[in-house]
Length: 250
Image (cartoon, rainbow, N blue to C red; front, top):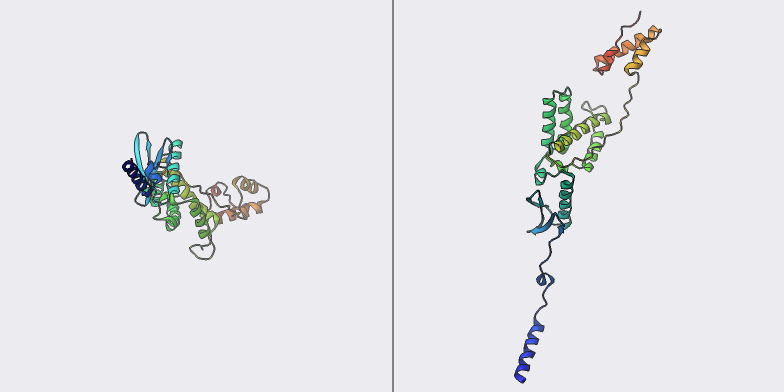
């Protein structure tokens, strides 16, 4: 009996001296997951995500040591699948320069008359966003681009860049993104909001108003309008101006 008791006491003492098992040792840690779609796991110091789309497995690095960044990426992929806009990791390799090249090709193929002006507009965009991933060109950066452009001077250096000029550049940027989404190179495009324009020109009228003025009996007004219109045409006036050309009345 004493021997058995001594053995029992010894075993109990040894048990008490052992450290308690940690939670992770008691049961395997469950991987953070988005139920029914995918989960997170850590490789080295970075968090990765793994998910399946149409039976194909996609492992993808979040590029971050923060677990929440990885979960946000997993959520983004889940939403893309739900909207039918899933592209996958390949969109991370698409550069904004690729989008600009596609835009220029589109203008060339469709023989758009404004192709010459496009190179000038894209030039300013390349100076600001060149070399960046397309998905990294966010609304915040676009707003900063507007501010920077409006603070610059024109090529002649006399006047500040006008909102209308910046809007033509923004329109090119928006079209480049829309082409990329249509071609399924990226899943979504940033919102490109236009600037408010206030470039009202004095002394110019619409075609219908022009016809009304020059057809009135007062010949002097017709003559003045025609002369003013001819000056405008020589300086590259709009196409509609040609429709209303009149010789000054005698």
